[in-house]
Length: 228
Ligand SMILES: Nc1ncnc2c1ncn2[C@@H]1O[C@H](COP(=O)(O)OP(=O)(O)OP(=O)(O)O)[C@@H](O)[C@H]1O
Ligand SMILES: Nc1ccn([C@@H]2O[C@H](COP(=O)(O)O)[C@@H](O)[C@H]2O)c(=O)n1
Image 1 (cartoon, rainbow, N blue to C red):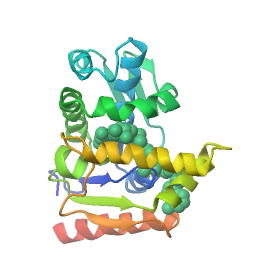
Image 2: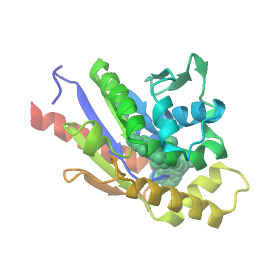
Image 3: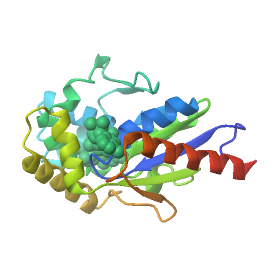
Image 4: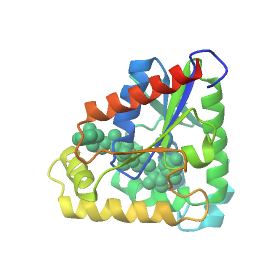
């Protein structure tokens, strides 16, 4: 376990729409831990590239600019925040344009090096431990995490969940878009979306959010008990 007695580092990875954010926030709130949405950080740097006129398909230009934006993540699970150069980016990072461009930006090695460093320093500073969610947390960012979870769900379930959020969205178009994004994230060379060998896989297709949260909380408590 991490240095402080009750401190715990939990890594939650998985494809898009499997419930990482909802689960991670609820688990962190229940256990008094900090929470970090790493996807929001990749979205934030993508938004900065777009608003500063950088062609996101030009990997060299993205790499050159990758050190410029100042990205700050607030880690309270009941009120997570993200700013870029001091500006609240929580709304703009959720647009369709950012969603369609984020995989190109997050595939650039210089971007990953920058954001991974940020993630590690946030995790190290969390006073009681942290739940960090993303695509490569268990494999690359925090390979020594106390507990690693890999969430999955069928593409149909994930598309139905997302389409439910985006009122009136077409489920099959939503399914195609998320499958395409997963494929890009899983096949990039640097730190692709992958399950760590020692991660616990939880298929959420038939589970309610509450059941998934209870499952993860139980796993954390088991790890804590085993470490006593
Ligand atoms: N087990 C579940 N059953 C039903 N709906 C769920 C479940 N888990 C999450 N959801 C809903 O599915 C949607 C997507 O969840 P969430 O944003 O947590 O996924 P995610 O894995 O973080 O997605 P992304 O990687 O795209 O950010 C949300 O509307 C959430 O309320
Ligand atoms: N650890 C991570 C987290 C995210 N990404 C990239 O960001 C995109 C957006 O993530 P969401 O969770 O907000 O959907 C995702 O599609 C990845 O391209 C990443 O590379 N590594």
